[in-house]
Length: 214
Image 1: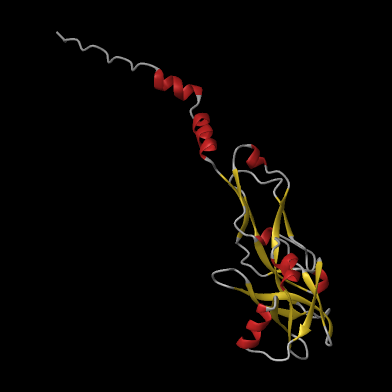
Image 2 (image 1 turned 90 degrees about the horizontal axis):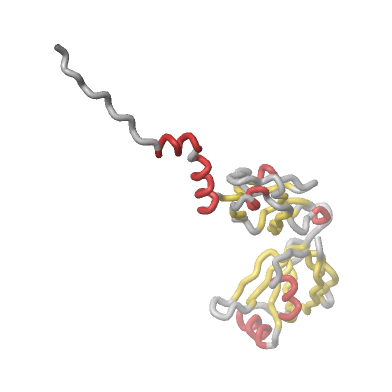
């Protein structure tokens, strides 16, 4: 998995007042946990752009002044309800031998025969929750749709990534091709066979005339 680097400075004190002062100065209050000790620090807001405002996911190389370097992932982020400004970020420290759970984006590849026939590709899931060692975390879960016809589905149970465990419900649909109105019209037209059409158009046979028996 790709990585971004963030440099920070330890926070002398914590609390709402201190956090507000950090934000006023253009920084973001952060916490790193998961290791021997919890580390409170701050980092410049601009450093978070490639980490937060991106469809991709990354691990993070944290360089905290006086504390050292740490491998981590962003575990939680808080935004202002009105301005969407970043208020606080939590990081989880990574260790080579410890499994980690992370949301990984879904990416589609290939051309679906069902889409060529007029169907609509639907991908209801943007990310999938996976569990693996840090070294095996994938940049994305690739879903191949080259055999997907109209009405077909790809579920979590159909996916496989080496050394990665999927934690979402196995029956959850990741990609499907749905029937569009245009496809339905064509299907209805095809159902009306020439023989059926001819039978419908042919005039009804007149009933035989009754004769009086003498």
